[in-house]
Amino acid sequence: MGVLIMVGQVILGLSILIVLHELGHFLAARAFGIKVEKFYLFFDAWGVKLFKFNYKGCEYGIGWLPLGGYVKIAGMIDESMDTEQLKGEPQPWEFRSKPAWQRLIVMLGGIIVNIVVGILVFWMLTFKMGNTDVKMDQLVNGIVPGSIGESIGLKAGDKVVAIDGQRVENYSELISSKVLMGGVALTVERDGATKEIKVPADLLNTLSDKKGEKFIEPRFKTTSVAQVAPGSVASKMGFVKGDSIVALNDTPVPFFDQFRTLVKANINKPVAIKVIRAGAEVSLKGNVPADAMLGISVNHDNSIKSFTTHYTLMEAFPIGAKKAFTVITDNAKGFGKIFKGEVRADKALSGPIGIATLFGTEVDWIRFWSLVGMLSMALAFMNLLPIPALDGGHVVFLLIEMIQGKPLSEKFLEKAQMVGFFILLGLMVFIFGNDIFKLFK
Image 1 (cartoon, rainbow, N blue to C red):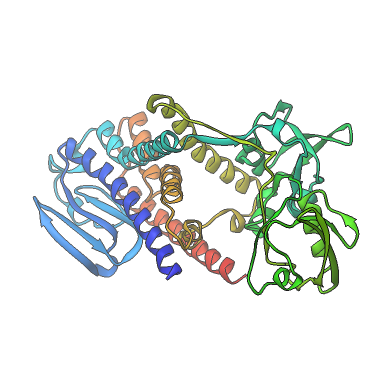
Image 2 (cartoon, rainbow, N blue to C red):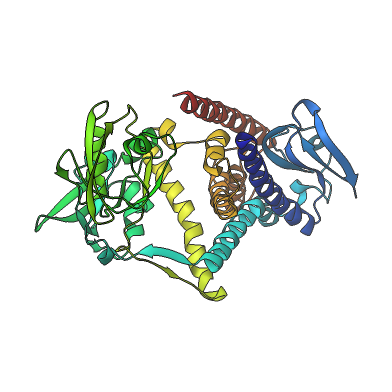
């Protein structure tokens, strides 16, 4: 059932974005009197259609191959490679008969709509949810690095005070794309001294290999047990809700990361854990299982207080727009790192299967719309790439036409479209194969 929910969310999210993207092309074409022959969600490969109907000279339908969608514009060389119509004399209602600036707007229509949708989604989420964060002065005990953070030199208790020399005000800055993209320097305070730690430019490779593991997290004190899983190792040891953990094998554990580290260090070994229960010290004994999971959850350290900033509708707009455009700049930086060789393509790129895992097996509408907003901006960026067969390729050819004062030959455009088609086909095979490989890795 969880897999069906995950797949359903992906199909719904992508369907919304594809329909709106193609609607951008459709409305722009209609505004300039250009005939649109087909409007399809998904591709009707080999002519196989799940559903179709005709309305005012345009065929609307749903194809069976859920890899995108398209509008077929009369008098245009597109991915359908239907050149029969181009053999006749140009008609006034055809794409090729319109001025270059109008055709440019038609090709940018889908990208513009994706950007508008992305901004709208992030704007509304910011207005509804506000921004929740933690001030750095709240992290009096510093941070705890995961194994990735440890590998670059961070240690439990470090206090990160600056990124590339700029003072850090809020915790979210430490887990932002600015840091996770790598290539920055963190200034930390440790044992009364200041130290600079370089975040490697290829950090994304490591993050991809260890998905789900946190780079860093706030350090909090060992607090009381919130819950004990029935039948767990902790239950058999005698843990009860409210126990305060103070030591493991006579080693004090004032911080929860210390307790967690000692548990992992004693896999398949007997341990004695001291807790305070109703003011008295109690010793609990048992063996640590192979997965190091005792079966307890602990209460959050109340000394770390988060804050939420709420905004009016108009105050939320520039903040939401900034979040939206950050997706585009992050994608651009990511591609730049791939081309520089700093990040491997198989680590950085994900397709529909990888995207599906982000939605999760439960419906969370805040997460759903956050991902839809992110995907909308990512689609805008991808479609703007100067690859023939993508909107960006058409835009480049139209700009060349506007500069030189005459259109490129139809034969050149046909060949370019074929090259673009094979590039995209190769990318799709790589991305799908990569997604499948990651599933079984």
